[in-house]
Image 1 (cartoon, rainbow, N blue to C red):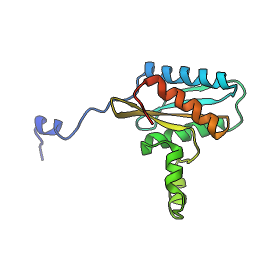
Image 2 (spheres, helix red, strand yellow):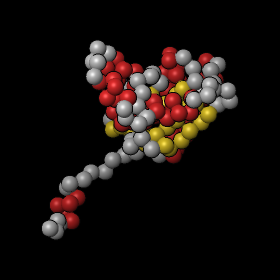
Image 3 (cartoon, rainbow, N blue to C red):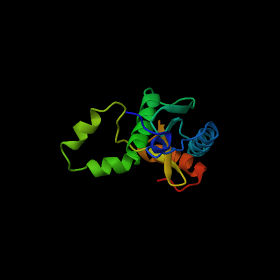
Image 4 (cartoon, rainbow, N blue to C red):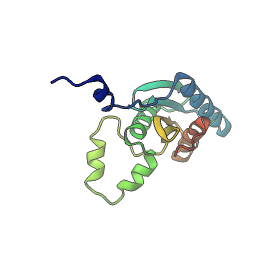
Length: 151
C-alpha cells in the first residue's frame, strides 16, 4: 500500500525536545540551588523519551546517586508527571506499585520533574543526593530555569 506524502504528514506531528542550551540552563540552575542549600547532588536531564541529555555530578554525593537521578528523570519524562505525584497516586493501590517498579528506571522517589516549554513536555530533570525535600528543591530550580511553569 502506498500512502501519499501529504496524507502521511497528517499522520505525524513535530514534537519539541529540550535543546543542549536548555539542558545546560537546567543543570546550572539546579547546581546553584544545591550549592545554596549545601547539598552535593547529581543532576540529570533527559529528553522527552527519557534519553540522557546532560548529567552533572557534584563532588561528594552518595554512592548510587547517579542511577537514582537517572531513574527520577526517566520516570518523570515517561509518565509526564513529577515522581512524587506519581508516588502519591499509587498510595493504596496494592497492585500498581509492583507493576510500575517492574519497569526499567522506574521510581516513586521525589526529585524527578517533567520539563515543559509551551505546554509540551520536552524532557525531565532528576536530582539525587540529598533528602527527598532537598532533591525536590534542586529539581524545581532546574524547572524554573525554563520559565514555563512546569510542574
